[in-house]
Image (cartoon, rainbow, N blue to C red; front, top):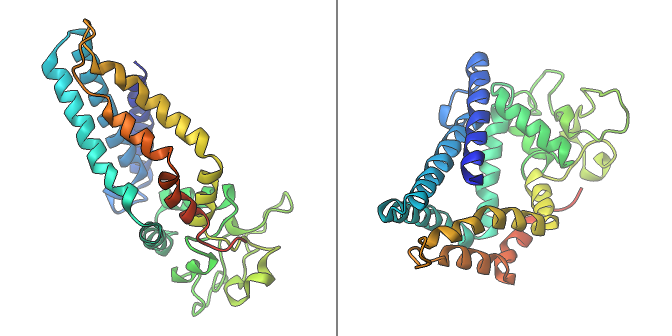
Length: 257
């Protein structure tokens, strides 16, 4: 089944990423490592999907009930996140990104991820470009070449050759002065806008992963064993204006740059 293959794929990527992480020893906090998160996600997806498939093939009601209750537990654990206000979500994202920025040069995993996000989404920092002042090398009270500046991944790419000091003294300047030099918009708002613009595609991916679970709610004789209300409630919520309200607020919560 698709879910088992997906779980094995995620697990394989996680194992490879963890092997690379162990080789370079870049992260102090093991549970914050993306590789570890991928490993946990892959194991969870594989085990849950395997239990569901085995229960369906052997017509084992105990395994099917176990599969249902695990899915229900996962759903109920994630459901409260729908009701978190956009301002609270922004605050959580902002504090975590700032913590990552603080250890930017000590954590190669986070550095690579943040550089990719800043280049891909044309953004800088969490809420805005001034978030980089929390890093000791970029703080304006520093004395090095990076002091009061931002990394090159924040810079507007106008030429092939990258100037690694293109963000020099950027934190000393106003937003309007920097529009042609660096991206002043925060990545929280940039990613939020991208999710809003690609909402239908994201919803289609979610549906393609959830809808196959509905057939596991019936035994070979067609009798319903596991109600499909989980999918119905989730899709009903996502397709309503209320379900998209939080995403819209998060996406438009900051000034564009």
